Image (cartoon, rainbow over all chains, first blue to last red):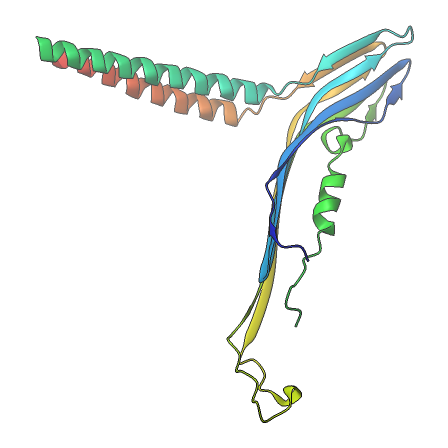
Length: 109
Length: 136
């Protein structure tokens, strides 16, 4: 058994799935695998962790004429939540700046 | 007992191998002239650990042969593992005739909840700013 703690290894791969042919259309899904894995071994024990996330990215559609079309597969819920979080953070920052300005003006006045 | 217990890594390797594109894009479903391919985000995690310990043993008696030396006073070991994961539906690919379209699915329980929390958060900060100016 090899000893020592290994640095966490990042996982980041673009994966292409099998082509699906429906009618004259050929659809190939593309996804991205991200994550991290780490393993530690020592004289009295060993352990490890791995986590992974598979996110759909797009589908590549090939028509009968050979034309290729990329259709992005977005997550609208995640986008909406990100926008709300950004908006909330901006409001907090702007309000903090206004509160500091009010305190400075209060001291001068 | 094995002093250096090894944990089988096959489940981790197997888990990573199973996370292929087919996990995010499901089996196509035929609905009349339309084919639907479900789309989801998949995440999972796994952890394991094992250990072994031995109490300080007695030194072998010099008068006795090594085989008859007193055994270690105590030893023990253990191992454990745990994991979890989730799948969040995100939408579906609709293939009908010559048209291929992605139809996203909004999480209608999460969006209003997040909206209410954002609204309360903004109200708190705006009222704090207004109070700061009103005190002047």
